Image (cartoon, rainbow, N blue to C red; front, top):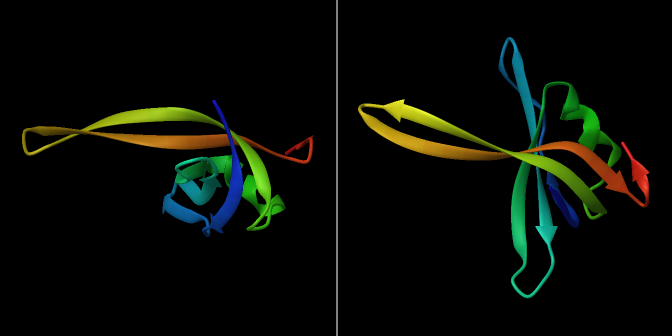
Length: 93
């Protein structure tokens, strides 16, 4: 999937465990009802966002990942938008 919008937030990389790191960023999508959408880059993709500045318009290519979490006999589901490619002015990074 793809989404085009303005990069409004770049967070720092977080080392969640010895084997897992993530970095979050937020894109503001224009339209009748503007949306601010949180994405994450994981592992070796964390540095992708380094090439972009807040305020720039970018195209994010991403996959939706869903997980089930069971606790105390109850199930909850979580979704992540995992970015794996970012484009700016016709260039791919």
